[in-house]
Length: 201
Image (tube, rainbow, N blue to C red; front, side, top):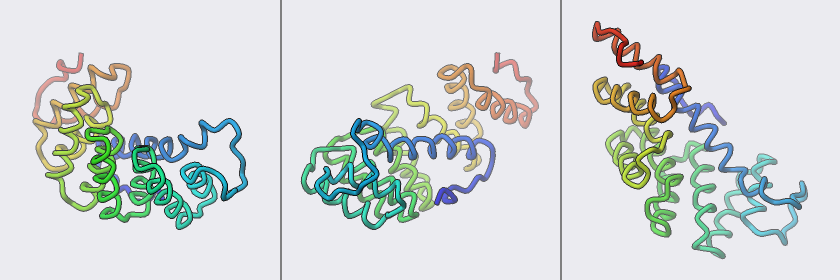
């Protein structure tokens, strides 16, 4: 299931790795917050919580149905849109993922999780322009969103725009100074430009 991401280079690899962690955490957030969580798929449960239990049992069709029911019953509950769009993303149904993320954004414009999912759906569909647009929209709301900068560095780097990728990586060295990955990628770009790595320190 997690084979959906193609690691074209180190920047892309790390950006997708972070996104996988985000997906795993988001899909389980409801279940982890329930102190009385049970392995039983009791139909009397809240449909959103029930969907999470189905996910834990790899019952994806039932999880989808429960998320859809949860959205119908609680159309303002944004976490159900996030979780369902992530489920579609993991199933490689990028059109449905984008549709569900957009539906959630109608309820809560600028939601960071939905914008990230939407950007990933566009990326997997080969629509880099729209992916970048969603990430820039996210940064307008949250100028220090680390996941957005990683994704933008990946998209611009693989697209050949190393100058822009360098700017995103420089920003990451400020936001996450203890993380060596952005510095390593920045060093590779600078080496390709026959420059020193003085900008890293």
